Length: 215
Image (cartoon, rainbow, N blue to C red; front, side, top):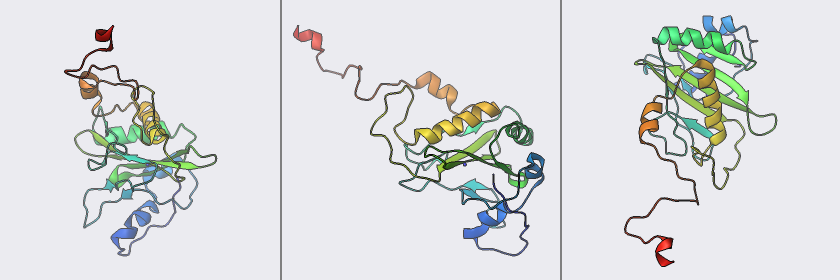
């Protein structure tokens, strides 16, 4: 959260179109994957530049089927970043290798340790864009957005579900399993989280009587 163009842009460009220009740059990682050269869909990637030296992923727009690990995202669009078990360069190289064995279209921009993967979307014939940026300190920032926005379900009762963009969360989780990259907060959530089904809350409300008290 692939298709890529084949031209290298050397002229100065506006920040608003910098992502599109960077996605047109073919890096060694992209060549290694051996995918055909095509134009890329607009995604959340903001490449490094003289203005922004650290690449990043844009926040999700409201009313879209999108999740990201941006710390400003609301709960229905937030997803934990992933964590690597090795240094950034090694983890990125392994990700390029492992994703090359799958049928999805993939683009890599090595200078920013960025990967863009196209996966089938929820709507028939649609595409979701999964994006990864391997950052310092063992963190992998993630983003997944559907190109076709569908209305969210009214509720969810599946364990660990968050009623917001569950399909996009699943896309990232599948990629994380393929790459062997766990969620950065997995241990903390395992120790502290407690899941209660929506509309089937069995927790006792403090200072309230149990139904059995009336029998």
